[in-house]
Length: 267
Image 1 (tube, one colour):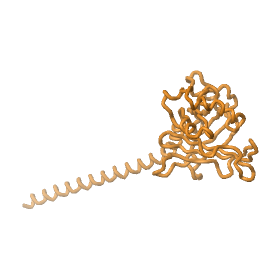
Image 2: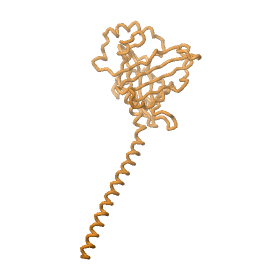
Image 3: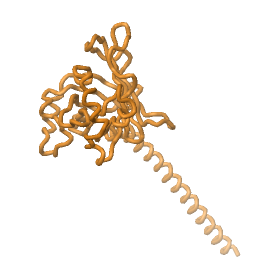
Image 4: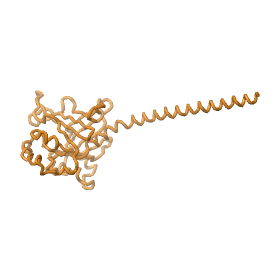
């Protein structure tokens, strides 16, 4: 009896230790996995914001629908953006241009954008800055060309000219239509066109890959002296509708476009 009792106790102790050991291992695995996931999430989420903004801005977008609704105030504009180079700090350089949709080969605005993370002390997620281009003629229709027909990345970085504006973007609150939205800092940036003292810019990146932009100029008294009454709404369009240059909308805007000759949008 004594031998049987000792054997039973040993067996029970062994089973107990095995169960306890199993529980401890499971706990360690769960805790370790949670810590690893937290660390992984923390290290990638901030860069994901920058990548998401770059991807959302990239592509061919049009203000065709808005121009059809309000042709007196908005034009059918083609906005094209694409990755151009990478900076040493990890930020992305995007090439950006705008043209009337009927003449995409003649852009009236060309810019470089840099997309990077906001510094940790700033209350934003992504910093979007615009720069002038030194040799604009060499970059016309950059996004429509094959890579072997484009300037080299090192040439692109060298052609980044003066800084124009910077927008601070934040991830939109859950439940809103947008993914990111932001604007220039209070007071905007110096601008002297058409009697302005400064300019402001706002942007909203929507979940359907739509981009809204709104630029305005103000005089020293805070009166708006150039810019539209609301943001431009750029939407991706099916390939079949992009080259519809004979539509009534485009024909009716041929003369209207002359009204903004020399306006800020062409600067």
